[in-house]
Length: 175
Image 1 (cartoon, rainbow, N blue to C red):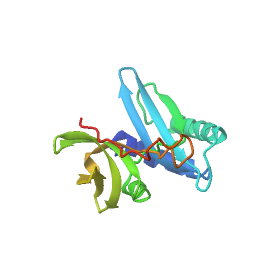
Image 2: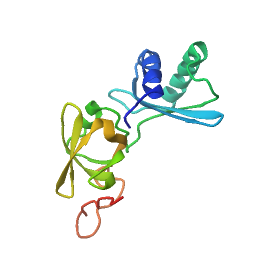
Image 3: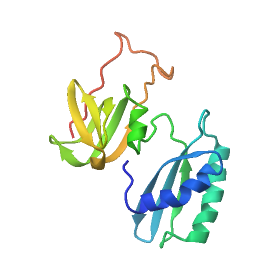
């Protein structure tokens, strides 16, 4: 979820407010639409889980900041969210923390005829992420990543039982 334009502007404005609450602003999604917009903030709490109280506190403080600075011309809905187990990845540093893990990536422009990839993060370079998708390597420019999320290992998390016959290899999305 590479942030561009308005989302980057809003992140710069709101990051100090969130940090002042002892939290991290992972990223922002800004989706303008006719007459209204959606502003979604993803927050993290270093060393612990994000609670509803954290989301409420950030919502209160960010709302006050937005009221004073008025950076959004239209009406908007503010949502504050924890990253969840399928955590969004906004930066190269986020990908670097997930080396060896499965991720889903939606591309802005097709690469090798594909707009969606699911694979393991192999490495991170200066401006790109190297993914292993079913044994094939894809070097994806960070500027071409529209959205990215961690694919949680539900078996390892104990949320589902291991399938009979062992673990299955994830299937790549061909779109």
